[in-house]
Amino acid sequence: MNKFTAPEHWHADLFTQAPFEHLEELFTLSQHADWPAFEWLNAQQDQQHNRQVVFTPNSELEGETLYYEEIIAQTNRIPTRENNWHDFFGALIWCLFPQTKSLLNQLHMQEIAEHGLKQRSKKRNALTLFDECGVVLAVPDMSWQTALRAHQWQEVFYEYSAMWHHNLLPFVFGHANYEMLTKPFIGLTGKVVCIEVDEAFYHLPLALQYRHLDKQLANMIEQQGLLDNNKQMSPLPLLGIPQWYQGQQDLAFYNDTDYFRPKRHKATNKDTQ
Image (tube, rainbow, N blue to C red; front, side):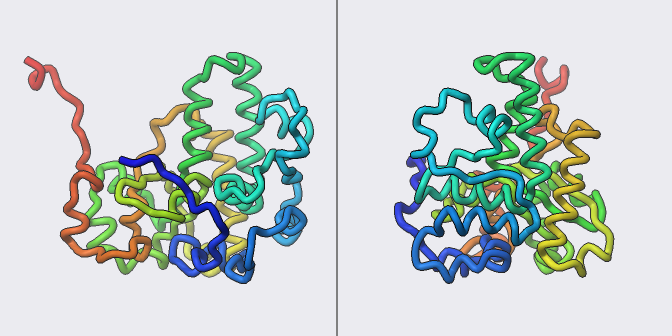
């Protein structure tokens, strides 16, 4: 596979595509003719009632000797590369999931204090993986998590396609997911965490849905050890989500086992003899 390279320039038409529907609804990004200014980016926290950090151009931090997570923890500034999709989406995730993003930073700092900067613990690996590739799926019951962990792709994506965006609501957390969705490719896979929601959740405005999930997610991470390791996350082929692939999502598409991989079963003693 060729190395992924995001588009060099701003593309407002991206935000008319289904994977970016939430960002368009909350930030109306398609109205921008060029990269939004830092003043605009920082103002979005106020609009979401989430002002916690300041997105700061990398050029203003050239002499900084602190590590990335240390800068955030000690100064409340987020080093942000100008005209960069990865960092732009990262800033928007801070606006949408401020409680969880702040908690991830705190947990990184705890792990660094215990293990140092060079030795990455299982927990730091899990924190980073979810930060980059995480997807929160709001579900009416946790049977959907069981089906996803069992890689029942045809059932979840194809047979129940009508439930997506109605009863099964995907919320992108990983900013790397958004970056790669600017030039989507077969193989693009996130790491999903399911959160059970009640009927009232589906009737909330989108911004309040994010606020609810942010609170729930932070609690699951802090109180239930969700990201103590990678085991509670499972793969989610992002282009399998109905409407998120521009090609035909027919049964043949979901039969591609190179992308929609079957669950690998652990070898038993009998299998290895």
